[in-house]
Image (spheres, rainbow, N blue to C red):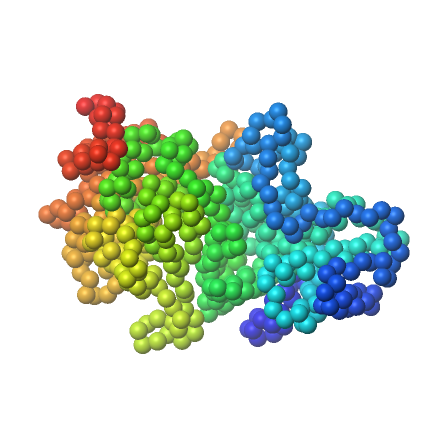
Length: 547
C-alpha cells in the first residue's frame, strides 16, 4: 500500500480489514514448518505433527469449493424467486450455499479472531508461494484452503490443550468460510454478494447496510467492517488487485466504478462524502426474454410483440429510466431477440450486459470495456492510460459489426453511437431519464459535451434522424402491509421519434396508464404498421386501443 495510506506493507492481505495489530505468539510461529512443507508440495499438513490426534477425524469442509445451485427437495414446491432464503428445513440446500448465508447474517462471529487467523494464514501462504513460482489463481485458492484447514485444526488442538471450549464442527466451518473470504474474496461483503436472493447492496459507512432482495423488498443487513477507515482501506485494495482492469481509488481519485468476480458491479465514493458509500448491483437475470419480463408484469403481450418486431426490423432503441429501474435487464431481453449469428459489439464502462458469456445466444460478439486514466492529464485533456467509450466505438467500425450495443450513454460517446446508427444497424443503448421525452433532451446534452463544434441544432437533428424508439422503464418504491419497503419495476411508456420542424417530434405508441403500471396503446405512426411482417400484433394493438 502506498505511503498515503499509512505506510502499510505492499502485501494487500495486510489491510486492517483482514488483520489485527496483535502479533502471533510463538506457538503460531511453529506453522512456518507447515508452509515449508506446503512449498515442497505436501499440499496439506496434518496437525498430528505437533499435537495429539483428536478422537474423531472431521469431515472435509465445504467452504472454498465451487458453489452449486440449491435444488428443491422431493415433494416440495420450487424455491421462491425472491425474498430471504427459506429455512434449511424447507428445502434441500447445498451446505456451502447455506454456509455463505449463515456467515452473512452471523452476528455472533468473532471477527477479531477471524482477522487473527487470516493474518496467520496469509503469512503461511506467502511463505508457501515463495518457492513455487507463478501459480494460477485457482491453484493459489486451493493451496490457501489447505493452509486454512491445517490452521483451524491446529488452533482447535491448541484450544483443547489450554482448556478452552472446543469448536463445534459447524463453528469450525463458519470460521473457515470467513477466513477464506477474508483471504481470497470480498471479506465480510462476500456472503452478501453470494446470496442468490440479494439483488442490490447499499452501504453508507461500515454499519449502515441495506439489502434489496429479488422480490423488491428492502431489509437491513449486517455491518461489513469494524469502522469506516477499515472499509476505505478494503476498497483501495479491491480496486488495485484486479489483474485485467485495475482502478485507482484515493483522495485524488475519490470515485470507484468496477466489476467484481461473478459479474456484480461496484460503485463507491469516499473523502467527498461524510462516510464512505458504495452500491453493489448483482445482475440476477442474465438470460431473460421479453416474454419473461411480461410474465413479471413489466408489460403486456402486445408491447412485447412491438419491441420484438422493432429489434428484428433494426430500429435503433434507447432504454431510459432511473438508476436501478431495470434498464440493463431490458437491454438483455431486447438482445435475446437477435439472431445468434449476427455479429454484435458491446461497449460498457464496466461489464454488466455479459452477452459475451452467453455463447449459445450470441455466437459472434466482441465485448469492449473502457478504462479510466490515472496520473497526469495530457494536452488532450485526458489522463494517462484513459480509453473512453467513444474511442472504442470509433475503433469498432473496422470489426465488421452489424450492431453496436452501448451499455449506458453518459457523454460524448453518443456522437459515435449516432454515427454507427447511420448505417441503419439498429443500435441498442441505455441512458438515465425521468421520462421518455426527457431522454431526448439528455441525449442532446450528451452530444453537445463533445465540444463547441456540436451545436444544439445539429445534436437535435442527429437524435431525431437516427434514434427511432425510446422505452421508458419505471421504478416505484412504496411500503407494503408488512412494513417492509418494496420496489416495483415496469415499462411506463414507449415513444417513436421522427424529425420535426422544431426538433425531434414524438408519438406515444404506448402511453402511460392513468392507473399506473404498464402502458396502454396510444397512437401508431403509419410507418410502424410495417412491423407486422416482423410479428407485431396489429390487431391486438388496435383492439386494446379501442379502434
